[in-house]
Length: 389
Image (cartoon, rainbow, N blue to C red; front, side):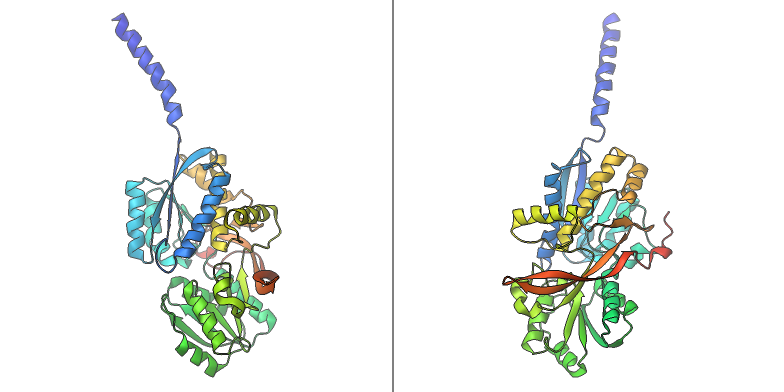
């Protein structure tokens, strides 16, 4: 009997020493974005930003080791659901990030947040999730889709641009961006064109633009489609006559080589540029250049911010097991953003500054220079519809 009691005490003592060690021994981070198809290079840019931030943190968040699980979301809501299901059921993720495409973010967010998984969008910012369908466990680090284009619309009005034609890829984010321009632009809207995401031959659209002869063209054609459009506009002899505006995706380090001097003079809107003068951004750009030999693109910058946001929140909350504490810590956004000024609105979307960058050629190479700041500490216009549960 004595031996049994002694053995029981020993087991209890051993158990009591093991239990605390099991508390939050690892964070399982899911990453989903297009890693194949026409948007592969954008998804990989997101991955580069995330991996750089994790390397600088020793692959830990708030001092807790991180294991990353990657899935190719490809292009559709169906493929996103398949990828998200694997991440949840097979990999048992705690947090999901990446999320380039709005149709995919809309498709998967409610299912994941209902399971207690935190979703941090690195780029896509569909208006339902900013407004009436906002979710406590959903955060967006980039923008509500319309914001960058709203800033551009305001800039076009300030510039006195009299007429604008809009061309966009035909999906959720594209229509949101066009709506954003029109919301703040007070000049004449002379037409719209919506094309498939794989569209490469713009002869018909360019003929229409030539016949209308607007003062400016707003374009939302991320990826290869935008490169093709600019080159075909140049070939048609229109770029010297019609000014091109858009977001920074119009011409950046991904496309400079392909578009060449066709991009010079384009004026673009974004809340982040490699040229922003703040300590966090200088460190990020220098580290990215050292590793990859070029300036980063905003897809990488936003994912770099995601990881630093998570690091600060995990540290403050002492882990992620207490979801209320972790959510509250995320909401504070107590980290140094590469954008400088940054905080979350009541709908968990950013309040931030927006800048205009112009494509210029310096030392024989294309780059950007910041020429304007249409918005300071701007939140999105759907936040008032969000009644966070």
